[in-house]
Length: 257
Length: 257
Image 1 (cartoon, chains in turn blue, cyan):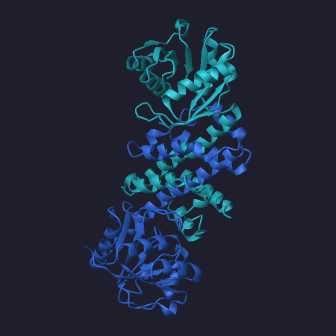
Image 2 (tube, one colour):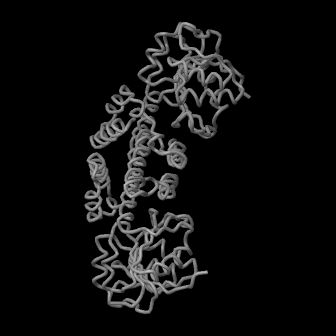
Image 3 (cartoon, chains in turn blue, brown):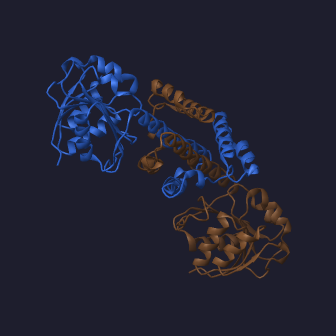
């Protein structure tokens, strides 16, 4: 049973929101939510029985852990505003270096949940991979204890690997989601709903657990069905969708054994 | 309880394989499997207690239904080889017109399962959408009866809509699967396994049932995190992956509200 600790959450966006909620739910105390925008801080503070703050000079200094959950571009800016604290401080980014936090405390690290968060979309974190990095063993121990409260899927991952994982996740998830949007827009032209594709989309995502996606590739490009490829291109009125179809088809054709 | 019928399967590829197996399992008789390549025909014939054939002049003429499951480019070639038959004849393509079958019989149509098939990957067809089109009501009735043996998800879909659905499926599924491959290759560079992304990939695919993917878009592009985008680009040594990252990122940026 990990020790219950006091936490300050910096950033009240999608990641900060879900981490704060999960940590609160697991018995930890959220002392304060700090965010540049007061509204989101207040909303999250209310949900986690904590204080809302938008002035970094009023940061609580009696917490055990500070979690910086802001976008990568802003991590350095936030770090510059924080006083030197003899505590544990982490960011939650897949791509940022933890070194920017070294000025604040010698106990710094990364607490990166490999999941895509949207505030209003509930998400079960119990099997979500958490990628942890820490400046020393003591900090790693604390982060592992904390993560084990939330998930059964914990990985010690160094910066280079974490950055690659994040890049891979952008392709597999952010970009796939965009393709679902393209798909939805194409169906809308015929007043059809994306729901007709749910079984296929879900099967495509599940199937890769048993075989490499390279082996599982299907579709007109995979079977060199140039007649269908040509027909599809002629159906794409939107130039940017046509460009995307062409590039992805070329890539698949080039990847065939 | 639909009537049990006698079926000839033309084409022993991924679609022909799974349809023949499902129809056999539901009590229908597969009379014959015809394929240009004798090996696959023989394999499927053995599994469905039917005859294998690679000579179209020896097609059985005593079947109730002929299912042409060959790639789009080959449907016309197959149709030209078949004699005029007073039966029901369908193809299984998302993109081909059924009119090419009109010379063979006046009872023709399309029996298009909206799923991606791989011979050695078992697939549960019971909720897979089947898109049906028929030259007359009698044929539509037969196709609906047959489809209802396999699935609870039947749609009467005209040619134009079906082609759009197929195009949308290429984006949502074939192209997403390719992105999973890219992702796997990126992870391999660090000796990491794609399995670390399974929870995220599955969640991304499931989440769109509750919200439009356009609303659910996350990632560096969605939050205009140009620092991370730049870092990702610098990490992509493979020119074709860089090109893809750039195009998809631009498209997401342009699609933001």
